[in-house]
Image 1 (cartoon, rainbow, N blue to C red):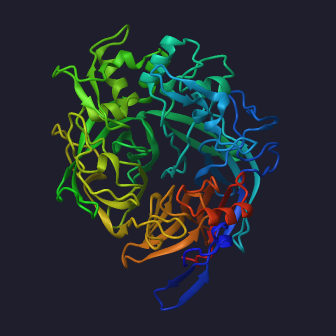
Image 2: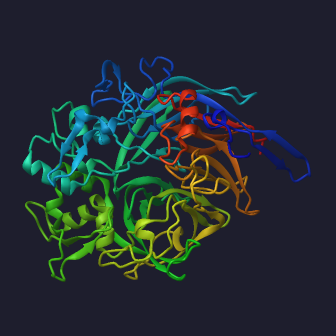
Image 3: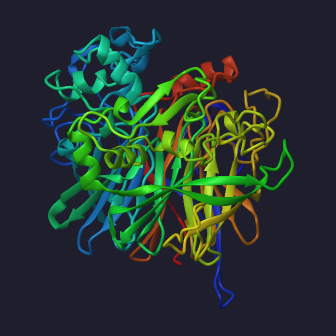
Length: 609
């Protein structure tokens, strides 16, 4: 389908693409795609007395909106979807990422009532880290037409795991559970500890949103419960069993993809200057115990490469981990200061290692051999599992990826796909810092790219020890036709070519269609974000969905159910306009949208496969 042209088209969820299927017998079927809204964040489904996007406290009570106490906080940011088929029962697990708008239309994390100064003197806002929610919706399918209907809904209770925050993308495990994610953007345990040393109440740090809104000020939120991967099992009757997997590390997880061996999980981390991590479980279908690794890249292409470069991939072992041992350390009160000696300036001591994660300026770290009642073994385990991003850099892995987001897998070719939203910051030549070095040295491309990673068997880590997986990355390059293209700002405000991907985020590979689906999260590059279909054999890229201006594409998955195919796709924060948008165009679009509404839905129309 062409890019939207009018204000009306740019304000709509627009699906004008067609799909053509050629069968082995030569028969051809061509049908139009159509977007179906299953429900919106503001809808009340079944017996749920509150809107779908409602945010809840530890007791399961809705959190009041500070601008109107008669209203509750409702998130406008639906994200991951997982469709759980139990045979005669069908359920949808959906994330809500964060709270964007308050009831009066103001941006939540700019609210004056929640501004504070951290111990380092920087001004912050604790509403940036408020509780979010995950919901379970029971669906019914019309077997003849394929239409899905939402009939019942409830929030999923994670109170035993100190709640949820910044729920981003997720995946469907081979054993039919939902594997979610928590993006731990700003909860730096070091900064929280420093703030609480000055203000022990916990009311002036980056965990304050949780302390105030989730725990009602009755207990302090623990930073080491943030950024831990959640898993949800749904059983008959809609009951859920939940866990957080401390064993898989702590980070800004975009999502984890579980490979067919049911043991190997590849993780992308959102944000600047982050690693690529790998977890290999001891047992299939059980993510509670295993070995954690981080990638170390060697660039094979010239510095300042404009094609995304080519890399050899090695893996640095971070440690053996397990849920129970790590959780026990967290609950025993282990702190950042128990793990590392730290300096923000070079101590000129070779026992300190310069590490830069989340920023380009390094901090200088030295792992402790004991602290308070914690042993050297405890500290090394906690460093790997709770300070995974820092420890990756400490051990020499690459911590220069910029917004490494979606992950997908092509089984026939044994290739994983990785979305890099923007090739910038640590990925640019000369921007790598720290003892580990400058591993990624590329020319800046703000529009980003989708990479392919060839997977190998019988590989060894950088210590020469075997990695017990057949799904280990060995080389990395950009797929043909999936490099974004920056352009001078056009009349609408686009700064990336509209006929190419820009800021790829969600990825999903469908084996039957041999198609990689790509959802965009473009804050400034594309005025409207798109969903694309890329055939890995023909290399053809097709735009199949346009979202309202400012909205991010989320929840991307493809399911075939009883002969009907569904391309799941949500839109979040509609009307969060690019700063580059033409002011006249913005004034035309704004009256046509409702910023408080966000759809959870799917594309229908794919012929039976």
